Image (cartoon, rainbow, N blue to C red; front, side, top):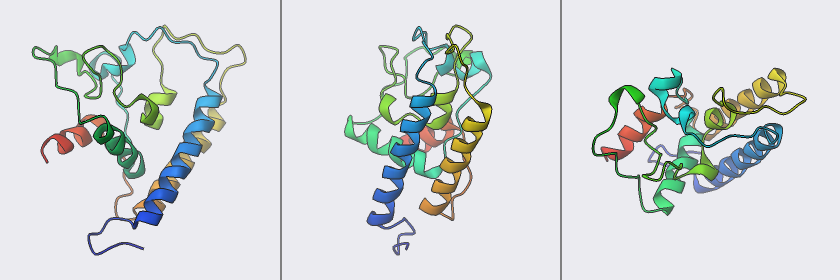
Length: 159
């Protein structure tokens, strides 16, 4: 049920965010064997040519995590524009909302990452992606489309 503000009720929000965390636990278990050098290559969208497209429920979780830490990190003073650095990277090169990072951040790795010996099933990843999308649809049926992370964060900055 939606309130007059158009936002999902508190109960719906809590249930959806708990469901998302459970799905993220599945994703993390699936990708648990991958080792990463923490180079932040995957966090430079201009370098990889890829950017996460989180759904409404993922953005709600991210926004809560960012608010809990006191807000977004300050953008670099002299950014390398062509890198298109993730707006959630702190000055130390770490994600400020790592525990709440979206599905796309949990499932994409640069070439330097070492995959687990038995690999990751594409079918499992696709199923989990569908589950996240379905959860987001229930969370906010009026906002079913994922959007670029940088665009969503820019909207937060403008508030």
